[in-house]
Image 1 (tube, one colour):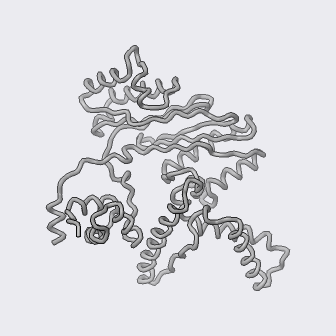
Image 2 (cartoon, helix red, strand yellow):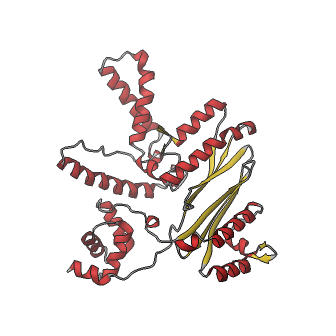
Image 3 (cartoon, one colour):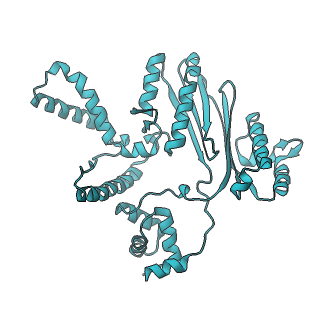
Length: 355
C-alpha cells in the first residue's frame, strides 16, 4: 500500500471538500493516485464538488472593453500578489492603459502583447517599470480578443468587483437584427458571470465524460436522498439520462408515445393532446439534462426568466425578430481560477486528527 501522507490528504480535501477520513480512505483505495481518488469520492457521492477555482487566492482585476458598434470586444486578466495592490491607483492605471491598448489592436495573445508598444516602449519593458514602481509582481495572465461574425455582434460584462468577466459573440441571419440583440446578449453575459457555465452547449461533451458525470450525479442524489428520507421529506428523482447528448429522436418519440398512452388512460380528449404533450416533453427534457443545466450556457435556466433555458430565450427572441439568433463564442474569466494558492503547512494538525 502506498504511503498516504497528511499533505496528500489535505490536498485532496481542498480539491473535493470531502471529509478528512473519506479522503484518506479514497487515497488508500486508489493507492495514493489523487486523480483517481477524486473520481472515487465523486462516485461515492462524498465530494461536494467544490471547484478548485473557487478556493484559490489570487488578486488583481479582469477588465473588458467593447467597441461602440459591438463589432469587437477584449477581456484581460492582470494579476497582482495582494488585494491591496489591486486597489492601488497605479495598478488601476496600468489595467486601464493595457485594456485600451488591446481594444485598439488585433493582439490575441499575451506573447503578442509583450512584444507590442505602449507609450513608445515595448510592453514587456513597460510592465517591468510598473512592477518596479508599484513594488509587487504583476502578471498579465491571459486575454481574449474577439470580432463579431458577419451579421453578428459581441458584448461583454465584468462584475463590479472586477473578479468575473464574460464575452459572448452572437450571429443573426439579418444584419439589421443584430443590434436588437445587444441588451439580451449583455444580460446573458451577466447570467454566465453568476451561474458559471463551463462550456457553450452539450455538443462539447463526449460520451465517456457524460457517463462519468452521470455516475457522480446519481451518487450525489442518492446521498441527498438518504438525508431526505431520514427527515421524512420527498426524495429527489434519479434521472435515466443527464444530457441532451443522450436524448436522441428515438428516445423523445418513445417518451411522447408514453405520454399519449397516459392521456388516453386518463380519458383526455385527443383533440387537446397537442396542448399538453409539448409541456410534458419540456419537463421530461429538463429532468433528464441536469449535467447540461450545471455546465452549459445554453442548457441553464435563465436567471431573469427561470421558466426558460438560455436556448429557449434565444428561440423566443428569434421568433420576435423572425430570425435565427445563435451564440457562436463564449468566454468566461474568473480571477485566479486554476492558480494554486500559497500552501500553509498544517500537516501536523491533519496528522494529529487522523491518529
